[in-house]
Image (cartoon, rainbow, N blue to C red; front, side, top):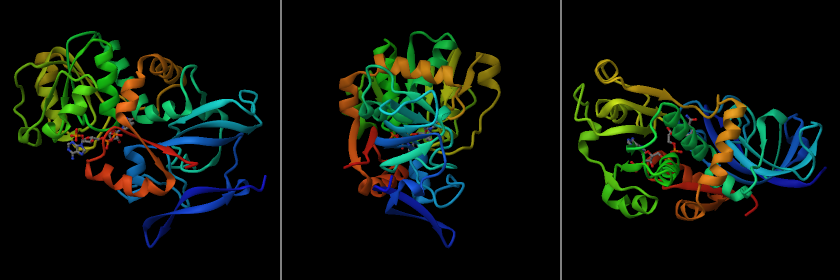
Length: 329
Ligand code: NDP
């Protein structure tokens, strides 16, 4: 196959990643069992870090970033997939160690793919993407911990994981409070997703007291740092926090008090290391529980040429909802 297609390729120049839109052919792609014509990818926080050279996300150069994608199988040497199958990929260090979704074609291992769940289009799958999958894994972690109702706090509410988590939790009947750095600016959007209240304020940047008033039966935290420390100090007795992110820092200065005196559980959630059965269960639930109106409210669609500018919004903490990348636009 000699067709030329477009991809964002990141090279390392003088120690810094330099992304460029390039023309590639199938011969340029890495070895793998399944060749996929990509329909959509998305921008996740990790992609923004990779494109802007924040941290060391990219492990080898040149790299095609994009940690998730949805598309159609073109060729397969695996018995699990045939030409024409619709597939989704999240995780497996794609876009970090292996070439990812910011390309019109990609070749990957069969075990990295899952079939597109019935009821989802490629576009919806990437409106969900890694961020939405992680939000669902957080919901499942809270449910597994016995948190089936009550007041839930979602931090980093305006972002991808936060937005999907609010919509899913509100749909399940929880009373959701959204924590945002800019509560007034984001109130209408967050209430539209199902939040009952939107809070925020300077105290969330300060080190909290070891224990505060009991306010939350559960929490989904994407921010880490002082925000996670305060969330832990405000949990009800027996409450649980699903922690998956570090948008506000990877440090955590807390005390043993919430754990000893209030039996609080801190549940780590990672979509990359998630076993295939749980990943499939999460996708099946997303296909039925992620409502179309919520998708319309939180998604915007961008082309490959817009990805770089949008990555900068993520790093500035001003990105809203989910950014779907139409790689053929
Ligand atoms: P986004 O950039 O879309 O959202 C992050 C949100 O956090 C922002 O919109 C903002 O919300 C808030 N925020 C940003 N910077 C700060 C800050 N310095 N202090 C406090 N709040 C801040 O990212 P995602 O939702 O895609 O990802 C969020 C986090 O989750 C990232 O750390 C990402 O790496 C992680 N993640 C982890 C996964 C896993 O498998 N464990 C998978 C996907 C993401 P607001 O304006 O409302 O305050």
